[in-house]
Figure 1 (cartoon, rainbow, N blue to C red):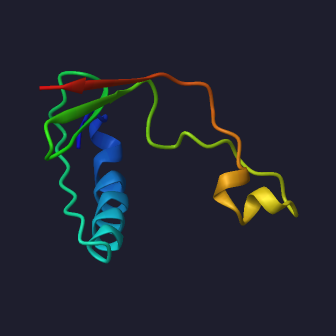
Figure 2: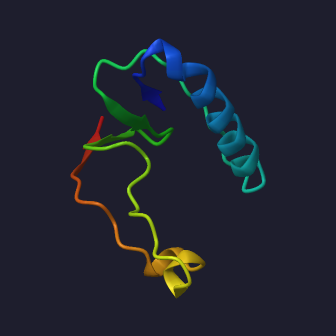
Figure 3: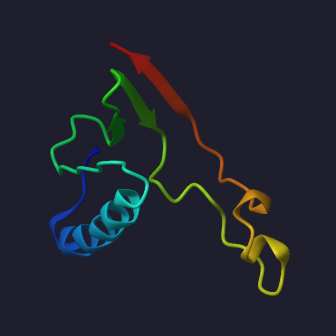
Length: 88
């Protein structure tokens, strides 16, 4: 993943990305991240596709307390955003 971030948040983002990287290893998925994006948010996949996101990876809205959506991701509402998928 290539992303931009202001310098004060990079240490926190490294911690979060490291947690994601460790979790994805359980599924045999290699996750790399770089703070060098020429676009504000994009993910490059090893199959040649690039996903450009109109918002950060936090696409889900905050669930209401004591609701099923707080424990079941598929019930959570997504925030409005656009994704562009590019091959090549």
